[in-house]
Length: 502
Ligand SMILES: [Cu+2]
Figure 1 (cartoon, rainbow, N blue to C red):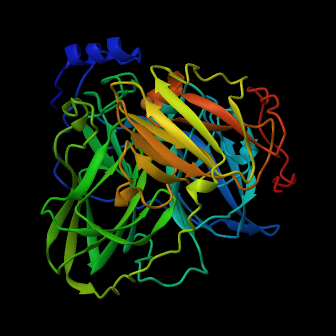
Figure 2 (cartoon, protein in one colour):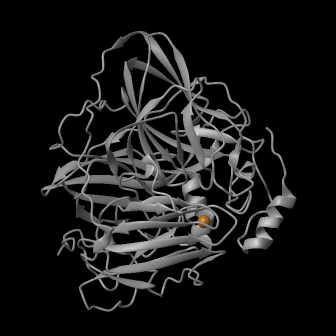
C-alpha cells in the first residue's frame, strides 16, 4: 500500500476555503492483479402487483470478502452484504419500491437522476428508521438512461454510500428505435460501479469520510461492482459499459490502456444525439457514462483511469495516478455485434432565450450562497414549466460537482466555452472547476409540492454532508414555498396513496 502524505498541501486548501479534510492528501491507487471475475449485480425487474412493478429492497448489514488477506470487511448493502441489485425500470411503467430497513441505523434511498415527485425522491426528509418500511411509488417518465440509487441521510451520506448503500438503475424505453446498442445484461451490456476503498490490515474498511484532501475520502484500492482486481470475459465484438462513479470524492478519467477510441453513447440523463468518438471520458462522483468499445478475438485490454483534469492548479493532489479498473478479455471467437446507428436519440432543445429567470449558486466553503444546508429552510421556490438558467460558481480552490434532483439539464457553457461533447446530452451532475462558472438550462415540468423539497448539492459526499446543499420546491405559478416536513418521521407509509402528478 502506498500512501503519500501531503499534509502541507491539504492544510493549505483547508485554510484557503474553510472546508474540512482529515489533514490527509493525495492517495496513489495501488495496482492490483486482475484475478477476480467481475461480479454482475442481480437484475431486478420488479414483480407485477396491482398494476405496478414492485421492487422489494432490504437494507441490511453483512460481511464482504474483498479478497484482503486480513479477512472480510463489515459492510452494508441492499438485498445483500454490499451494494445492491441493478433495478431495470421501463419508461411509462408504474413502479413501487418497498424498502425495509434492517440496519440498526436510519437511512434513506434516493433515485439519482430520476424524474420523481419530491416525496418519493428519497432525500434526507424521507428517513426510514430501523425496522420500518418505506413505500414510494411513481411513474417512470423519462428517456432511457443509466441512473443509480444511494442512501441520502443528511450528514451520513458519505459513510453509508461508502459502506455499500448504492446500486444501479437501468431505464429502458421499449418504444425507442433499435440503434445497434448492446443490451444483453451482463453479457454485452455491463454495469460498472466504480469506487475507491482503503482497507486496514485486518481486512476491514477504513471508514473515514474526512480522510484525504479537502474533497474528502480518497481510497487506495479500486473496486468494481464490489470486487478489486476484476476482469470480464468478453464474448461479443462490441461491449457497452455503463460506468458509474460511485466514489465519495475521486474523479476518474476513463479510457483504455492501449489508447483505443470508443464510442461515448450516453451520459447522466440518457443517450447522446449521436455517438462521440473519444479516447477518454472524465467522471466526477455521481456521474455516469455509457461507452461502447470494440474488441478483437483473443485480445486483452484494460479500462483504466489517468489523472483527471480538474483545473485546481494541483490536480496531482486528486489524481491517484494511472490505474487499472477492469480488464477485458476477449474470447477466441466473438459473436458479431451490429454497427451503431449514426443517430442515437432525439434530444429536445429548449431555447435559452426562453429562460425568464436566472438563478445563481455560489459554492464556497461549507455553503451555497453563504447558507449551509438547513433541513427546516427551503431555499427557493421554482415555478413549474418555467425555463430557467442556473449559474453555478465555484468560489473555492477545490473541486465541486453540482447535482440537482428531479431534473435533467443541458449545459450551456463552462466558463466562456461551449460544453464539451461529453456534456452535450442531458446531465444531472456537472463538474464546476475552481473559480469557474457553469451555466445550465432546465425546466421542472410537473410534481408541484410547496412543502416537500428536492435537493441541490455538491456530490462530493463529504461536502454534501457538511452543508454544501440546499432545498428547492417546485410550485404552481405564484405559489410560495411552504414548510418542510418534520425531518424525523417516516416519509410515506401508505402504499395506496397516489403519487402526486399534475
Ligand atoms: Cu464540493
